[in-house]
Image (cartoon, rainbow, N blue to C red; front, side):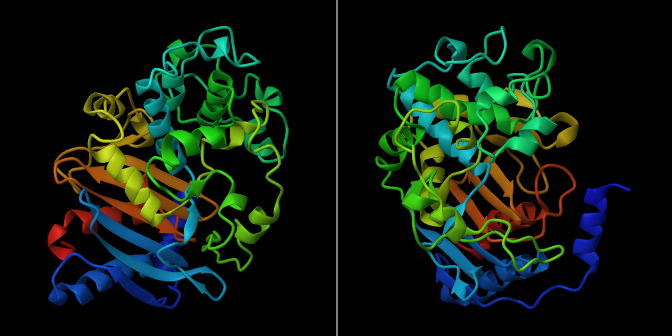
Length: 383
């Protein structure tokens, strides 16, 4: 029997944990709507067994409505400044930075990455655009999944499990291995560490508190917990991550830095709002560049019929949520779900971060993200 089906059944059938303490830290609507909005959000978080979470609905002018729920760590409530490892939302964050560098004519996303890297993935050319649209013919094989995080150099992962013979035969395949190569390519192109590039081109200009090294954040970082079955030992222990050495963060090291851009950004909800607004409208990037990022380059196919692939972004076409495309990215790791999505028709967006929740889903999109998106699209609740 399918493991995901069993998980989904357990998420529905098993008793829910107690509802967590929660607060409304910001609200755009009238006083009369406050309690209704807060209950709608907390009902969804309770339904999906959240340990802790932050839901933010934001407008282009910077105003927002936000609910904080539960714990980031034992005896540590989620607050406005809690930082999260936002998993694959890092791909959208990285893509914004890459496109800024292209606008500045510092790089080209069409060059063959092998002209810069100290190693080859295969003989056929691969571009940054292909890496960011998952059309490079790369795969997350067993050797990648078993060895990532062990410190092995990337050259040990260049094999037939992870590198398909040619991209020509494969329209699209979501690949963390491929997305992680983006950091290595940027380091080779600019002769700077990936972290320094991200700070210089994205985080500092937008005044965002974020890093691909949790040691640089220090305190107020959420753990991530598995909730089915619930385990008290976090799957991601923030204090343990912070205690590790960050040696080499400021050095170019393409053989080791393939574990950053695919999912290792630590950022708070306010930072994600800034990222969302940069993706929403002209300012940080030009209108033309934003349109290119939101152009569909591939379809997820059977993986999720509702999704198409932009540059570093998902294009969500689901009439049960909105009658037009929405844009953004989902994160999914260590028992936690994340989401950053924007609505160009209404000039607003949503940010969801968690420290552990149900991973129930039918396709790629997590059920909890879909439920929160439906609240977001009901603007009478929060505006």
